[in-house]
Length: 232
Image (cartoon, rainbow, N blue to C red):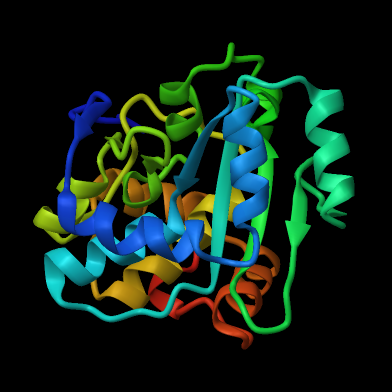
């Protein structure tokens, strides 16, 4: 499979997205956590889904409710991170981070970016760009820096404007069945095509088990692989 690398990480200031998204986080029930983390010198990012869905609204007029916030934190020790997550009653998730789940607000999945699963699996040194590359899909490779209001992008803006899901810049590919499932479900949810490279990736790596898991998690229902996408 030939991967095309067209979108190195870029910084953007998209005022509409920044002004829409940041108040939803800093005025939420978890705002004291952000205050504590930033006071300790941590950099805090809203990653992937929430930024992507806000981008969808401002780029395409597509209104999608934000189900959760993926919050990446870097620049603090693991012990301190574990301590503050325990203080705020976070529960461990299978990715090494914590889930914070109020009854009337979108849940938070919070993790130390230095411990990002994809980087650990592939023994890649930590950097913000490496984290975005580990999101594999260009459509998800985006983060909003809460401290500075900057959007960092490894292909999400191009994905929207081209109406096509492909690979992030130099993707750190791992968990192939999971990302094949994510690509297919996102293409259906947002009415986007798959690039030729991504379609090949999906055809080779999609499994019914992974697709069922991702569909149940993201759509709340089971899903069956269409015949046209089943590998021979």
